[in-house]
Image (spheres, rainbow, N blue to C red):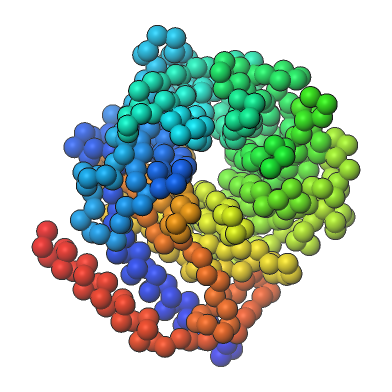
Length: 507
């Protein structure tokens, strides 16, 4: 091992200790009332200023059936205050509210899963989720849309409707709102029966009627080429500033076989939604890719990431590719991506992030400075991890901002998946420079699971070789390592841990 690598390892270890201690000073708060036993999981979060909305599912036990829940917190709360709790004045803006479909005009649903949330206006949020029309052991899910009207920190109106105009059984919806025309653009996994691979579809849904609208008025098949369907494709959809829809998904299977990640572009042409770029394999079949994430930096810079799931329940490497759809003729055919160097912004096509940045079932956010904030679980049910990075213009394309930070060190609650399903953490980014992270934590010895939340300072400053530690940006890359003044690192840690120890003693 070279001296440079020895110094780098020491630097990484020192920073990991420093940041772990810092994270330990961030308070973990339970969103649900822990005095009422239950299982709460699968959060999805979005921020509007400091107000953070979260949708999730909950039931009395892991057997379900699960209801959809909504809550809101003040993300601007001081999470370094170790006395912060759900009962602290001003923290819980909207207490957990069951979205239960009992009001007249609502469509009945049973056993909700995988909600996704977005802000429609200052007093409305939209939630898409999957559920069943009747209680059944079969996974015959349909898509539902919940519109919640908010006033003075309360849900004053709930509208839960079955999304109409779709066929078959549909799951794992991803969506974005276009408030200018009152629609949601959705991508989802659909199949004709309760078994077999899922195809990926796109549709435009009216927020007023919860029905497929626009032209052609029927969903568009995105997984149109052989080999592009999947056992759990988990489509990820984002709109760009022109309201064109970019979608990525995994063409995976239930085996350990390597698979690709696909991309498609949908745009409106002469009033008609058309597939401008058909299913194009972006991440090659070198690994078993899953849980894809698509982020839009600009119309010429689309970032797609996915996780290697070769080892079940193990945090895997992150593959990343940056593409430029504007370099394609957008004639409705796939792109010959492996030979089109104009289309690829990260030749030779993909970068693999270093193994110390591995994650499990991640969620990510791209801020206005084109910095990527990402969270996910660690290996085998370990707590959430957060870090940030941004892309560079040359190999190895990735520059890291912060060593991975364990989330929720003050909690003993760790994530566990629902049987036959999955759990994942959720992330909301505040413009004030904070990330809010939700996760489902199992209460030891009870079988219950709380919806936990904490806030961390957002990664914001790129380390350079002139200031403190740097990390290997990607395979093949290495930067000069410099160890900063040890006292400047250690003294703040001592103060944090002394403070924490005093808090624990006084409890």
